[in-house]
Length: 632
Image (cartoon, rainbow, N blue to C red):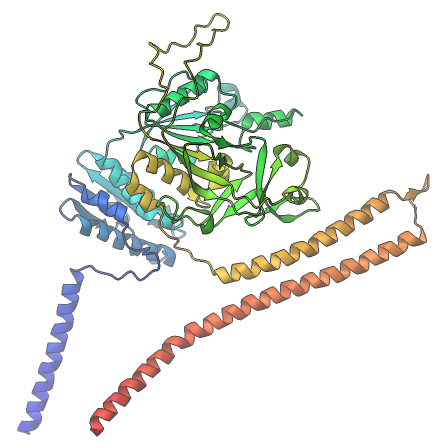
C-alpha cells in the first residue's frame, strides 16, 4: 500500500509539474514574438528599405490597428488577412520599439473604439447580418495623423509599401520637386460648366502621378516653357510633340545644369486625345512624339514613325470580327528575361505590357553610354505606324520581318553632355495683343554639363496610363487601384531611383504573393499556338468561300441563287474541311485538358502522400534504432 501511494503521489506531482510547465510556456510565449519565413522571396520579412526608414524615425509615433476580429459572420479571407497585418505591424514595432508603439482595437458596435474609428476616418464594411466590419490603420505622430481607411486583401502585394509610405511621409519633408511637361492630360482635366451640364465629369490625375505625390512635390511645366525653374530636381517630359526651339533649349540647359531628365516618347500613343479627335473627324491622326534635335545630338537613334514588333513577346488581343483572338506582336508582354538584372529598380520585375513601342539604339560615334533597362528579343522588326490604321493584327504580324537586332525599350543615357545649341534661341514674338512670357534675366548659356548626366529614355507612353497599368474598383464609395502588371512599379521605381528615394524602391519591388503554376500556363500557351494555326486556316477558307458567294448571280425579281455544279462542290468541300478542322480543334482542347488534369492529379497525390510517407519512414527509422539499442 505504501509503495502504491508513493507511486500515485509521484504521478500526481508529475502531472502537476507538466501542467505548470505548459502554462508557463504559454505565458512566456505570449509575450514573445518570432517566426520563420521560408518563402522563396521572403515575402513575410520586412525589406531592407523598410528597416532603414523605421530605424531613422526619431519622433515617437503610434500605430493604431482597428480590427473586428470577433465577428462570427466574417469571411475567412478577411480573418486570415487581418492576422497577417497584425503580425506585420508587430515586426514594425520590434524594429524600433522605443519610437513605435502598436495599439490594437476591436471596434464593437456602440463602443468607444468604434466612435474613435469613425473619428479617424476608417471605413466600416456593412455585412449581410447588419454588423459592421473594420480593418483599418491609423498612424499618429504629435499633431499629425495618416490612415488607411480599409485594408483590402487585393492590395496584399503592396501592404508593406503602403504602411512604410505613411511612415516616410511623417518623418520626411518633400524637398524634391518634379516638373511635368506633357502634351497629354496626365495631371487631370477639370470639366467646365457646359461639360458638367452634359454629364461629363472631371478627369482625375493619372495614378502614377498620385503615387509620386506621396514622396515628391509635383509642378506642371507649360509645353511652351522657355525656362525650367531652378528648384525642379527631376523633369519628366511625356509625349513631346513639336516642341519649340526655346522649349528644347530649356530642356537642354536643365540637363547641363545637373537636373535629372525622364523622356517618354511614342510612335503611336493611343492615349493622345488630340490624335483620337483627329481620327474621329476623318483626318490622319498625329499620335507620334519625338525629341529629334536632342536625340540626334546625343547620338540616340529613334524613328518616331516606326513601331517595334517582337515575335517572342506577343500579347493575346481580341481583334474582333472574323479574326478573333490573336497574338499581336506590336503589344509586348515582357517577362523577367527582358529586364536588367543588375539594377535594383528592375531586377525584381516580372511582368510588363508595352503598347506599340518604338526602339532605341545608340550610335557608335556617341560619347555617351546607354544602359538597357528593358530590351526586346532579337526576333524584332519595325513597321510604319500608319499600318495600324488600315490593317488587322494578323496582317501587321506578317509585316514584322525579324532583323536579328535587339532594341532598347527603356534605358539610362549617361555621360558628360554638351549643348545641342551654340547659343540661346531668339525669344518668340508675341501674337496679337498678348504680352510675351516674362522669364526674367536670361541665364548664361552653358556649352558643357557641370557634371555627368543621367537621362531615362522610355519609348512608350500608353504603358503608364491607367488603362494599361491599373485596375480600379469601388469599395464603400471610394475608388481603389490594383496594379495589373509591373508598369506602375517600373515607372515609380525609376523616378525614385533618380530622386534618391532608394528605400521605397526596394520595398515596391518585392515578390508575388500569388504564384501561378507556370507549367500549366506553358501547356495552355502551346495549345493556343495550335489553335491559332487551325483557326487561321478556317478563317482563310471562310473568306475565300464568302468572296465566291458574293459573285453569284441572283435572278432578277426572285430570291433564288444560281449556283454552278463546281460552286456546289466547292461548298461541300469547304463544309467537310470545316467539320474536319473543328474536330481537330476539339481533340487539341481535349488533350490540353487531359494534360492539365493529369498534372493536377499528380500534384494532389504528392501533397497527400509525401508527408505521411516521410512520417512513416522516420518512425520506422527511429524504431529500428531503438530496437538495435535494446538488443545491444
